[in-house]
Length: 288
Image (cartoon, rainbow, N blue to C red; front, side, top):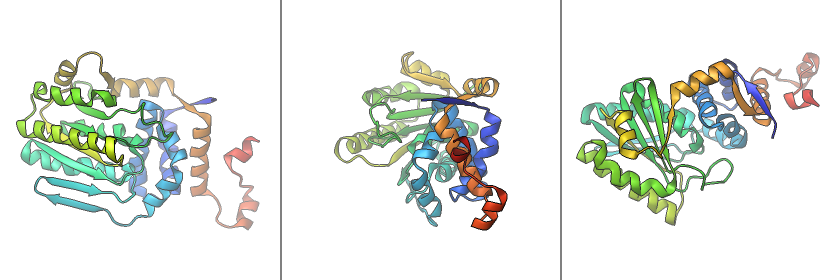
């Protein structure tokens, strides 16, 4: 697979126009370009998700309503096919508001087509001084390989910004056993155990697209690292992002070409005559 080095600034320039081509509004596209960029920086999955899930993202952007339940102890968002690019930041805002009142919040997100953007979305929580724990089971990855994807992700505040911790499916029970060691409120520990059971049940019986999100106040990355031990994957988001700004991102060439093709959809002349007069052609055609 050939790769192309892309600058972070270039992704942030092209990203909003590419997302506009998929049907996202200006505000969502502007903020969403940061989520896509972070997904590419962290796991080299942002641009690939745009390419592999293009049709699902277009359908989701056309959905006009999202069902939200804000009842006591029952925060739930039914995204109805909308992307995490759009629903994710709103979910973090909702959970942060609830955590401000109760020191923790539990939120379920259902019906999202692009779990690949979850680490990027979770990395928004530490800006509120909050730790976000996402638990899921049986979600389909863009390449159809569930086995290699983590079943839980934690985003926590640290001295440098956001720190991400990720665990594979067979470590989900360990996360539950360690809940009491992380100094979280008993009610949050109970919610965490329940979320783990729900995710495990979906993984075994009926794989779905639900994400259980626990948001906790006053829990730092250093505490989590000590509780989980040195073998758990830990990512310093600022450090990885600084390196990407300095060195660029080695992205798959096919994914980069698709990104530019989406941008061209936004800027392309709208009639066949004007296309011909402008000499318009897709990136792939230009490369032939």
